[in-house]
Image 1 (tube, rainbow, N blue to C red):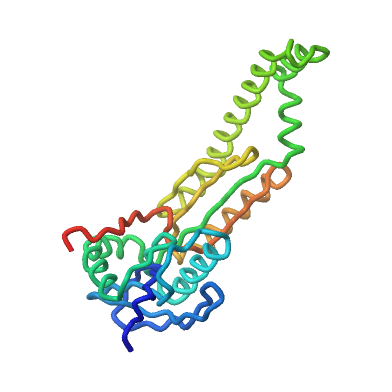
Image 2 (tube, helix red, strand yellow):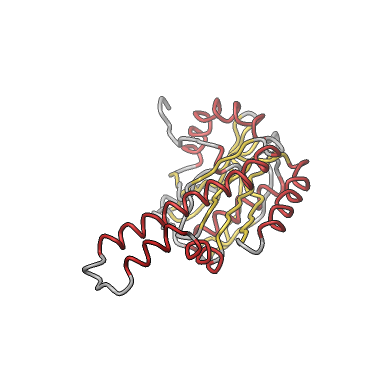
Length: 255
């Protein structure tokens, strides 16, 4: 069956395989779409035929992309993630892309084979953070200077107070990184401390771990949680493919 000129090929991820893998169907913007592979040597790209247009990274579309990649991860132990929203005009174009990317894929396959990514976000509990700020002598001194003054009169003191609180929070982030991130890093194949998001986040980390060590790593996370549960909330996610440890440029230079 020939491809309609109004359809394109949406790509989800790359995999290492010697067969024409079947991954079933997914729901893509309300329509059932069959997943298929486009192969080159021992590599393939998992794709679906979709309307040719720009896909916006709204929550539903991002979830669809992520769920599809997770579905592939369940069936293949060497998955190279591709970022959201890449649509090509034809299967032939994707084939050219894959041939171009193959040297990168070949290098990455042994590095990520049998490995998964997990994420750990550590968020300070409001009451605990507030108690730390209120108990800090320097903050208390600055707060005392502000009390009873008009907002205009205490403008510079308020700026200084904000600076002192930020300094305290930065110190706390360093402490959490040392006590939580560093021990987990020892169990992981690779690790990454990303920039925290939001006012209360103390750690935003990704870890690449061997599937065989997943249970051991989970145990370490549980132990850390038990030690810190009164002070922070843990957001532990995964398994994912190696999003934070793979950097593939989708170019067809010299094609």
